[in-house]
Image (cartoon, rainbow, N blue to C red; front, side, top):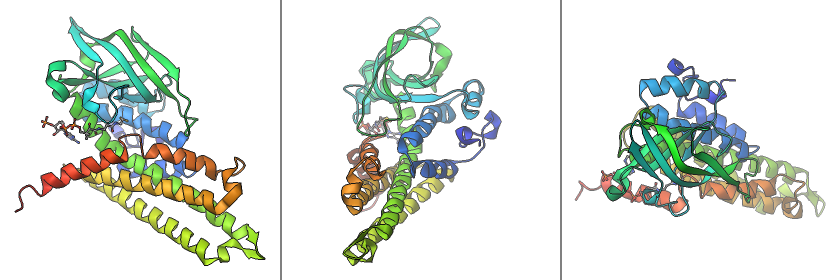
Length: 338
Ligand code: COS
């Protein structure tokens, strides 16, 4: 179905679509399971740095197999002591001859172990803070690259989350993305591009939960009538539907902004991730409420949806970090105004 290459240009054997096409696919997968859709979305998260910052030679080598679904991708930024504070990473990269030597451990990496191609952010100069980070393409099988334990999670349990361990891992010099010191910008620009995908996960998941709640409320009878005949239930459903639609519009707007090649995309990207994922948490929780005791049991899908929803408010930047990004953008925007 060309899904794996939806966002990859045709020059690299992709479908040639953009953010919107990609998010539409994520939204539909997420109606049923965001564990599946995050495996799909994190594949793009690993590929975006190559798309955005790769040389033509790097793109020619790595993108076609990704676009064709032959190779799978992951993105390695987070560490035990560097989550929200992405600039605090400790993994190091030292140039020795014709290769970089990577040492350190990445934590909670989606698709870790399953993926073939990894974009890794490491410090090539610790004294320079965020400006001392660099980004590298690392292949599964490179000497010194191994995987830690598979995590047990509250939700998205079909998606793999693992540690990546680098012990004197040898990465060819030509696998650096951009240049030394550009790693933090590579990571930030990648997240700007990928956060609407998390918003799309929220929209799809909320829609899936709303669908389940409406169907149930129409068929569940109490006090001699379908529970949807109660205005209290109708109003809950009305709010769920309205917020889901508002989230959808914001995600599509962010996709169009990215597609138009606008320079300042951090704010709208963070806004749609923040809003749509908060909506998903609220809508899935209310779906469980409408299904009542049945909603709490595993025989209906809404308890899984509610468990799954929580991670959306956490990964690819907590929703508190999204507010920081939006706040920083506002300060910049209004700086020239009295
Ligand atoms: N695009 C381009 N440049 C950006 C940028 C962006 N979106 N965001 C920041 N930068 C630049 C800044 O302009 C600054 O450049 P200068 O050094 O030239 O001034 C540099 O990067 C450092 O930025 P800043 O000072 O804002 O960095 P902070 O350490 O304060 O961190 C946040 C900024 C919190 C936004 C960042 O650490 C972040 O996004 N954290 C969340 C990480 C995350 O999402 N993790 C999830 C796991 S990855 S799936």
